[in-house]
Length: 160
Image 1 (cartoon, rainbow, N blue to C red):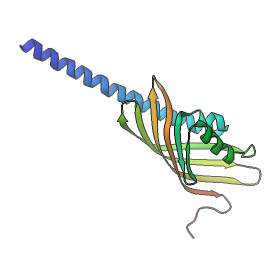
Image 2 (tube, rainbow, N blue to C red):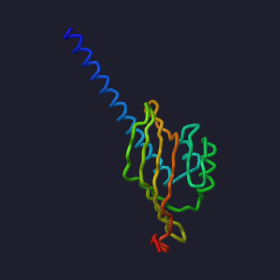
Image 3 (spheres, rainbow, N blue to C red):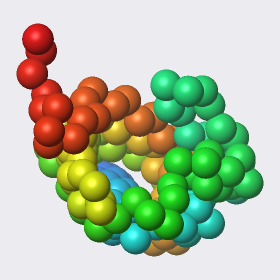
Image 4 (cartoon, rainbow, N blue to C red):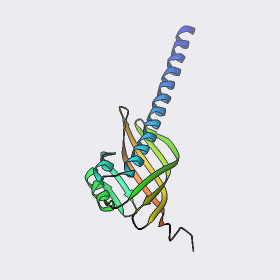
């Protein structure tokens, strides 16, 4: 009896360790996906940004919700112009939370800079993302963008 109980206990420990490892791998894959998003926004095309979402992915912004890659690409097409200048997008303070197998929530702050012909822009806010991880690949299932500040360097960001 002791051998069977010990084997069962060892099997359970191994199963628990494998489940924790899967969660850690999913979290790291999701975190890396946000890096891919930031990198894509540095030189974006609407189609490249939309490809980071699942087919039925949802983008939530203050202007509304956009469901599916085509609607998401249309949203970015309306916001991105060839004259947007040099951009850099930074993510900080990422926190991951396992929601269910293959689904990770990633909350983060973002900061972006843009250098255009007539001005320099600066902004920041938060992302709350649900990232679907399947077979080591990640896509946004849901992305909520909450901008806090968008300004240029002439105007600044004072409260007054």
